[in-house]
Length: 191
Image 1 (tube, one colour):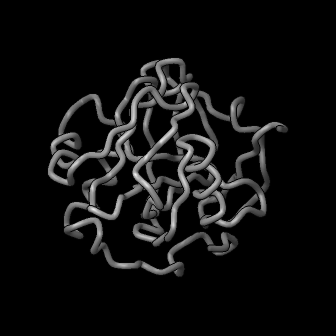
Image 2 (tube, rainbow, N blue to C red):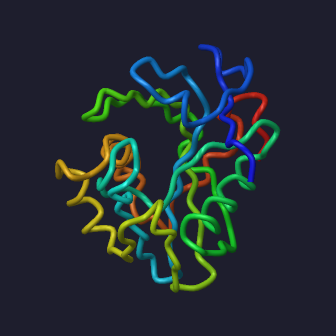
């Protein structure tokens, strides 16, 4: 596998190039494309994960199911499916755009900044069994939505999870979140 590339963005959310992922994350991380995924099972529980303790940025924080970066020319749905397989060993059977315009900045304890346009996608798991990659995920558990809401108020939650939950909680039951469509995605990003 080659070096993972991220898509760099300008303030109009247009792709302006790419860069290697790891060296691009530092105290002045350029604005770039990412995504977050909330994986649900058919009972409506959400897979919540704890980032591996060996991760360079935000190690050990609890967050949504998975996050990642679409590569240059990669569609959002394909990127989410890839990370679900690679990070969690999970196949999803459907994908829905929930917060296509989500953007945030957050600074880790070591000073590393996340500066991302980070559309939020809901996916439905084909099965409840997960096989987390220990380099990426310390723990993965199926939680009720009520427990997810409680996590959003706790300091061990990732900053992006807390911000996303501020927009997701008003949408109600995660199985009933409305499809926000793809119009709010960056113009170059295919679904």
